[in-house]
Each structure stands twice: as C-alpha cells, then as structure tokens.
Image (cartoon, rainbow, N blue to C red; front, side, top):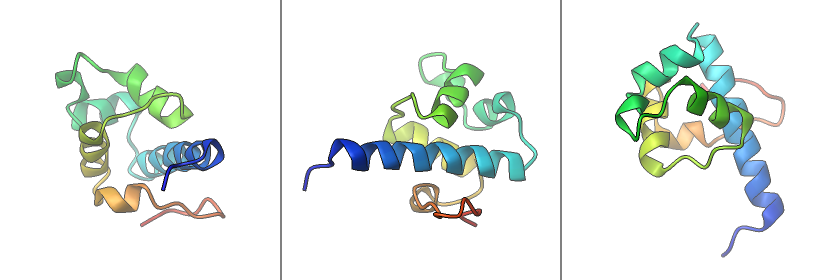
Length: 90
C-alpha cells in the first residue's frame, strides 16, 4: 500500500511534533539532541538538521530516526506514534 501525499504529510507532521515535544519534556536543546543522537557522525549533521526534523522539512533516514528515538529514551515505533491532542507519546 503506497502512502498518499496527505498521509505522508500527516506522518511527517506527527513525527515533527513528537520529536519537539519529547525533546522539550527532557529539557534538551536541539543541539543537545543532535549531540546525544550522534547526528554529527552522519554526514556532519548538526542542530540545524534536528531543527529541520522538528519542522517536518527533513526526510531523516531510518538510522537517524533510530538515533533520535534512542536519544529521546524511547523505542522507534513510539516516536512514530502521535496523539491527536498533541499529548506526549510516553
């Protein structure tokens, strides 16, 4: 089953909201998140890439998503789970 444009947009938006919400809950800056996720090891990705993920403009690889989830202290599937109310996914 192929993702429709609207489903992909909702998924990216939900991912962006989840990353931002969880990062803030942990009291992390975008730079802290990038450092914890070792994003700099992946083609010199830094805080700006973390920002792009939160804005929904980046298309992070599975490896990046895994590292971000690990840094946010949760399993990858939970990172992709969003609440309609914007509540935490924890």
